[in-house]
Image (tube, rainbow, N blue to C red; front, side, top):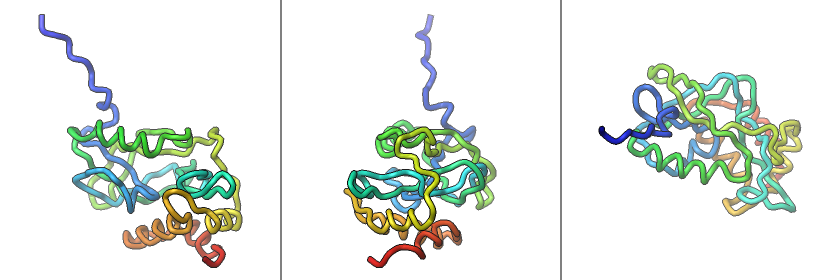
Length: 190
């Protein structure tokens, strides 16, 4: 009798086309950090991009926390769907889990994305903010976000750079995010 083949644990994360798709909506847009063989403009419905996670290391400190983006329920979000060949999926998922899943602030979910360059709908991995996480802060006003972002500086640099890089790369894609633009307009002088 031939040996029983174990199921591939990555299989539920792959799109039926055999690739892994990863949805970038913040720093993954401009700093994915993993190999991919395609990047498509994409739309995710049912979630919106929001500064809703305190950062006490990457973009702030415990004394002066910064903020990072999360996907919060409601609305829609445009970003980038990175296509990763199945052969590289495990390595990319390990990298993303190490990058995004520390601190219990995100849930890794499979979501339907519409590729805006005519590629149809794909199953993609997205990192969604955990509203039960200790770092979750969905009720901040734009003024409070701007104050925290203006003061935040962590091991990955100034929090304002995170915001401005995201806005800049979204604009390169032809996307204007009114919420991010409002926070940027309220930033205190550098």
